[in-house]
Length: 227
Image 1 (tube, rainbow, N blue to C red):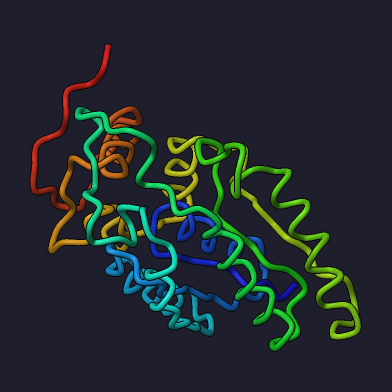
Image 2 (cartoon, rainbow, N blue to C red):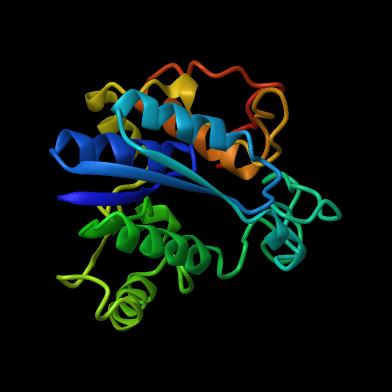
């Protein structure tokens, strides 16, 4: 079926797109520029669409960064923390971000007559907020009301990676031939991956656990593994 896939350019969403393509779905990829510090990821989203021969939309919502203040991903006044230097709260979280991304994706799904929207949430993302199964279920219920009369059949919301840990996502990507050098993970969004933010640390740890070489360069050496 035709699926609108929300692809940021990170490992999870790129693997999700390759997985859906391998299953035979007709894809339409969408990414959102919401003023994120690491907007380099959007180049990787566009590259994934080209590889898969899928239409691609990049939606400009950069003004949202002024609304989504207080997160290291959107607020230049908040530093990106390191896992070895704990900070109060969780500055890497952008509250309600997935609600915004999914609203854009469902609007596109109606426009292109897609049957479903897919998001790359994986097991270690799942928490009490907008990555939870409850959120996804309730959001779909809301969208089915919002799109009533505009679609012939009720839309679906897919999360095909939701039970896979990061190592499982990478293992699946290996099977699918995902080019890891064309994925972006680092929260800092500099010329190369910093190697020390939470996202880089998780990525490096997963590749190491699987005994795989990660082809992307890192600015800093890996942090010591916690015991």
